[in-house]
Image 1: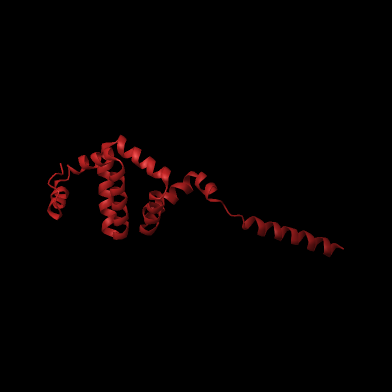
Image 2: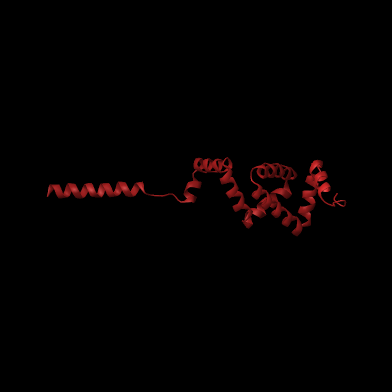
Length: 142
């Protein structure tokens, strides 16, 4: 009798221990922890493949597109910063560059005010403007 009660207590303890080890955190639970969230964001920002995956997700998310557009419109320095980041990413991943340029052209095509803002930002980069003029007939570009 003593053996059976010891064995049953032992089995319950082992099952409890194993079940507590197998609990998985959801993504939201991981992100609620400030330290884990900072580590996750830093890992994504410093790993080329993860960063590309995050950029693809953000570019395909309507609320992210809207947030990025509002950020660009409210801060003129943001456009210059994003252009520098885009150049860096384009050097590393040409497919990402083509996708971002396509999205930029779509944005300019649908919203003339954003196009005007982008053209204003390009004025501070005369080499880009001159290079573009040399590639195609852009005499009316101001």
